[in-house]
Image (cartoon, rainbow, N blue to C red; front, side, top):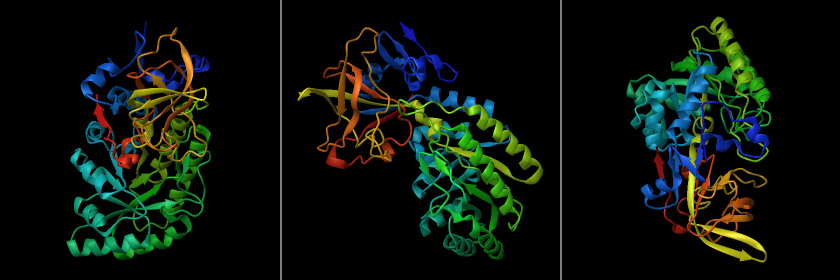
Length: 424
């Protein structure tokens, strides 16, 4: 029996029956998980070893098509490189999005090496080093300034180098993104400039003769509530419109952030994109009248690539300890910190996990905990999960692993080999 993914949103009936929506992106044939049209065991043979990350470009392309079809044609779609900076993936993304957003000099180098036009790269981050600012001015990218210090350094760099410095102001808004997995704005924050302080900074930008372009607002990430996203996007635009009145020149760039989430855990449901898209159509219409020179964009990371990735490890051992089954894998938190629950979770919950070669409906099942090879009780890939019975040699697939995986994990911890990465 074969099941296959399609361009539609995840199937509500399948979700009601208990299947995680992550599985809608991949086929199952003869009881084995298929990724990019091949059994996972074939990819493991090609890799030559486990663990590895496998990214399916067709899943990314389906998501880009969905967004392009739903969002205003005038709205730029930017990729947040921090979600996954794997160079082949960046090279794949570069012609498919309208810009890259980076957060370090290292990410900037990778963005340029991937072929992204420097004019379509922006750089945010609360602690930019002098050399990073020099690098950005030399490349001609847009700096999202997050403090008066950065503005003054940019003015000095531009004067010394005889090159223009492009600048936008990252605004710490006077509201929060409700139900965000991680809040990045509102209240006291290290990110951006408090909204009430922005007019004074705009005045300084004008006096220093910097090339002002606009604003960046990013209230939070990993939100599955469409109503909260709509409210935040509308408030972000209204705040930018108000601040534009104090700008030294017309706004030509307005980054409204992102925050679109993907379902990781059993109670999660996919984001309903339709009301968010409707709100963005309304904002784009307002901007055409109120900020006619502005190019609006949103920046998305995990929403573009998170569902395309699978982390694959192999079971090394099977142990029974005081009535509980433990499956010991050759990969764990050193490769996939987020799946272990140590990357922002308050209460640990399991990512969608499969025993990749034992997905027949009649396979015997058990409750088991999958752990990695590290000498720490934090090294857990799945705790007390309902799984097909597994044996040493079986492959474990952790889905929803395309974002904040290898690059967000302590790969050198205890000296185990790094995970491979593959884009297919």
